[in-house]
Image (tube, rainbow, N blue to C red):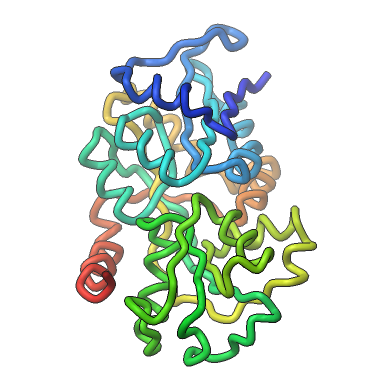
Length: 286
């Protein structure tokens, strides 16, 4: 039986209590009493889409069991990541670099490159870059690579004054960005492409009022991070399972739910293109 810890709403009392506690290994009775490792994800939709992957991992693990912790949004997720709350996670951008300084290491990455979609409300009148000026853009998190940085730099490169010519409205998740545009609170929004596609499968009525206007160039996708304190044998076994996920039907179904082709080995050096991107972003976006 797969045991999943699901904190979709992540009550503030629970989050603040956890943040005040020092990190300790987590043990819970799950079937045979295996040690529990927490997989951190930044929102409810990610809990739902990682469910099959967690089942796949747990079916192949003996001494440990994976549980998913889904926070209320990206900012709460970032706080937990800084505090070392998770045992493993999948993340990109400044969060990845920060996590490496806070007790995590890169062991792999999503095999596909990352792309971000910039979508508009069908009634917004935005059809070319010059139409963006003066509008509100809904962005999922101030420091998210695929949610905010990639689309802002892309628009900047196309001549859009993203530093003063648009109103940036930051929201806690990709789903929130879509809802803001759907409800007319923003004219355009951004989302990591797989998240956009996954959410619209569940909420096709939202897609009926939104349309993708632009897509960013590709960039290296999210990294798979483990806590430095994870047992080396467990870490090697777990990483191997991630890299083999696409080799059988159960694994392929899990990857399809995530809308990715698989995972492959990586380390810090793999993310040099992302570091170069961040340097350019910080130089021109404020």
